[in-house]
Length: 264
Image 1 (cartoon, one colour):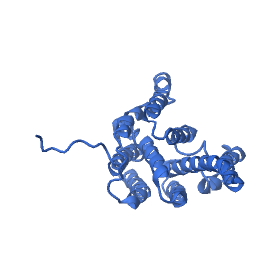
Image 2: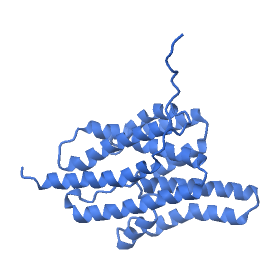
Image 3: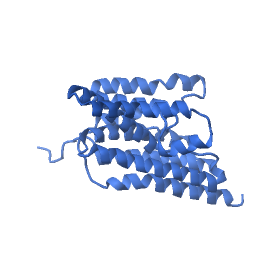
Image 4: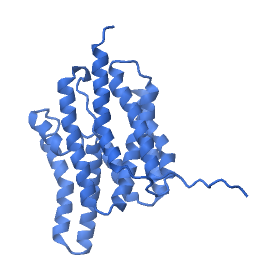
């Protein structure tokens, strides 16, 4: 009899760690690539990060003990990161209008998913207040998007800080839609896998004939890791993942600035 432990899949901590490593590689390409020759492989590997973080978000929404605090935490870090983007672009011209903020995407997915749940539960329990909250949660992001759609004015920048706009978050409406689909697929793994595969490959043909789509099709390689998820939380370090995001952006941006100032 073998003494080796059977493989039990990947827990949440391991999945988040993989996404974090992938994200860091991608941001090395995006940030340090402005001043150094960073291999495109970093960007290709980086395509795994956003969908895995979205997948983890959906799992978190379904199992968190306090959904309100969970969503509020995402909102706070979204605002922090937006302010950070403004500061970095103001102090570091080499960044040239650089902008990333996965927290804004995650917050918007969580808000829309939770609002939809409120409409359903409010209708079933005949709770008009809860139903109204759900409708407002869904409508408001798109109303604000319509009002400030790509105007580029100061008010758009201010609104974008305090309330993510569906078409202007990282990944845009594509990633928001992906997140909602994965959330409502729930435990229907086969349906989620088919949808995710088609969604990923949707970027393949355009990337072959034009610049649209880029390397985003490579996100399909995140699917096996999602399917290996065993539903276990794993180790803690919750706030490590939250804090790592803004801190690593600052460090990489500072490194890019220092490299740009070096004589060549």
